[in-house]
Length: 601
Image (cartoon, rainbow, N blue to C red; front, side, top):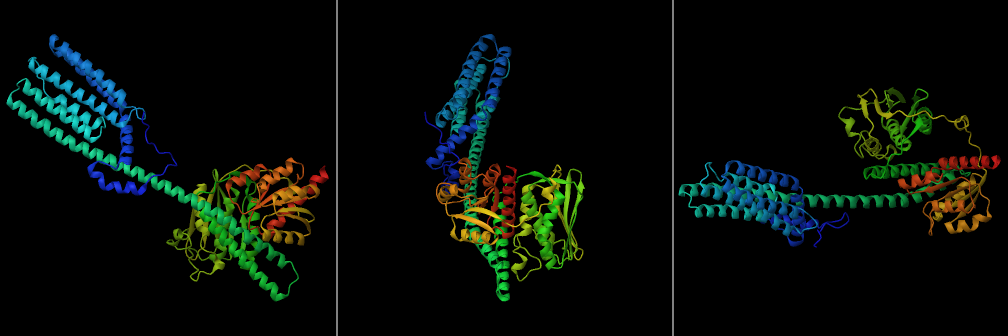
């Protein structure tokens, strides 16, 4: 049996070919491959109506059989009931056989359905002509044929050619039967005019119906082609972002580490200032790269929120502390007003990026002297507002500032004020998290950017974590990094901080040599030369008992799957380019943890 040419989700759609078929719609005929597929489409449409067609056919047939039994003479009713019974059997068989897509080829199904339609019409013709010939006491007209013709033209959903052919066969057979029973000429003319006009209008209607069906089929296929094209472009963009994220972050990571190493060396004043300017430029480049990659990743749906409850006040204090020195250089006071013992349920990274961008916008563009984070409770949500006393915003600008690359007070596009993506990223994050938000501002009266976050459960934290003091770095670090420049930069910087560094260029080298080395912590890139990546390397080191201490992945890979895998493996995750201060803090925390583990054992 012929199988329907169903397309899988991966089979291609020839979009230009479907576009070309629009020129031939008036002829109701596609080119052969597309016509074959359309026939299956029509067959499925016809089968979707099988319940309505079957119930209505059986109901009206039984109704007419009852009317024959009640109103016709017994000798005539005997014949009409037999004819209707045979017709009902034929119709039921046609409905059952024709409405099985995938098991019966469409053209055979349409042929059987048309045969059933013609049989139903001829049965009505025979009953009418027999009743007239027998001169029954009740008036028998041809009105019942209208119901049959309407069903065949529209309810059965037959293709136009089959529906028109069947309708005209029934009409002509009826007119021929009137001639056989020698009906009055006036009746034959009247019936011929009415039935012929009805068949003509029905034929036009079935033509328009199939035309719309073919148009709908083309539109569906073109929409599906457009959807697949959009998916391919999205996948291509995702692949580009992953590649760009890794390849661009890698050299930038090494630059930051080398610059930090230079800044810690005894340099002359002019050289020190030059290195400082180089550091500022590199950090600006890092911020621009992060913004461009973030807006792209959010646009293509690569980011998925990881929701959890966390305490708000200490989290906000750490966020403000990271910007305090920058604010002081610009003469701006940063404050936090947050009631104690409040927690939110959100994604820490996304919420931090949202509020950090609001704060950066106020520090860079508001011309303010005070920027304040205010937290108030609104039933089951906490409203977090970033308020400044700066120049404010006109009402017309309050929506425009969220557009990409828009900066209201930077006509020269100086890069020290960013690239105009911060608030656009905020809008993408708000759409992703589905949080209520808004802006309240007037010219000369400052601005308030607010967002409402779900309330979370307060997390009890050990006192020693809240009052931890960062000691000096002392310990042995295993570093696995396949990129030579990045490896040398990290090795030099870690060594300058007092660490003994064991550097390896591959997973195989680390497996071979770490067995004889005694290291406290391990830092590994995720993408390594050879068969093992950084995550698999750490798992093997643990399984073989070579290393069981604290470990971190230092990577330019920003995939969400890696975040979950690192969490399950109890690994720190550092994204390149890593700020030297963050690298030092993470390595210090791991060394402290390793020391406590040794002391406890």
